[in-house]
Amino acid sequence: MSWNLCGIELGSPLVAASGPLGWGKEFFEIFSTDGLGLFIPKTVTLKPKVGNPPPRIVETTGGLINSIGLENDGVYEWLKLEDLYRSLDIPVMASIAGGSLEELSTLGEIMEKLDYIAGVELNLSCPNVEGENWSNNTTSVLEATRAVRKTYSRLLFVKLPPKDNIFPYIEASRSGGADGFTLFNTLPACDRIKGGLSGPAIKPVYIRLLKEIMEEIDIPVMASGGVMTEKDVRDYLYLGVKAVQIGTAFFKDPDIAKRIYQELQ
Image 1 (tube, rainbow, N blue to C red):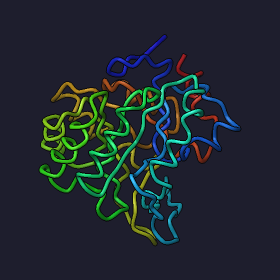
Image 2 (image 1 turned 180 degrees about the horizontal axis):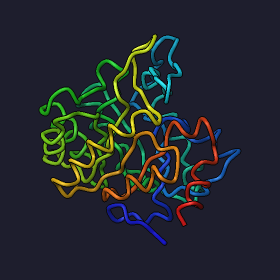
Image 3 (image 1 turned 30 degrees about the vertical axis):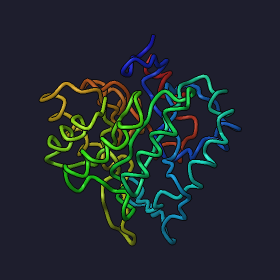
């Protein structure tokens, strides 16, 4: 059985969300891709970022709050992992973010040359950073999406935050050239630290928001938020999404994708 994500054939509807598995080097040295249909490495920026000062992760009832701040070694270090990504038996979609339109265009230009990535997820909505969060208004969403589309011609998903009135942001990004959407990023929260809440506590909120979206407009969506079980995946797929991302659950069970996929059969 296969699933189609805007022309990409996936062997599973389960996607390793950007973040928890890092860039994949350490994870795939120990664990396999079993159960996964797509891998999205941790968001990469043009230049290295040190991220936010500690503490950066706090466990809460029903989830985690993280304030990592897009820490990464920059795109030129990420490019050194080409052999790893070519060796995987599932597609890889890059996740990018930038602090300026010029940075986003440059990242798009770099990604355009990489035949070993299946597409790009443009992260416009990390709640833990200054500068890289473009989702505060529709004009910024439009400009940021357009900046990447100007230099990148292939599959482009845009990752947006959970908002009650998300439709104008979706339309702005579509106008800028988005092919699909990752809905949603983490939920802004505070418990000892300010950051993004992930984990099972957010799923009922995201189900409600996604239900409203999918009933109104026909767009390709990867759902993200609170997936811990096979039932969670089915709840999202029932809404009509193309794929379902798994994130925080990997911290509890690195083999969770394999287990959930088996239960889906």
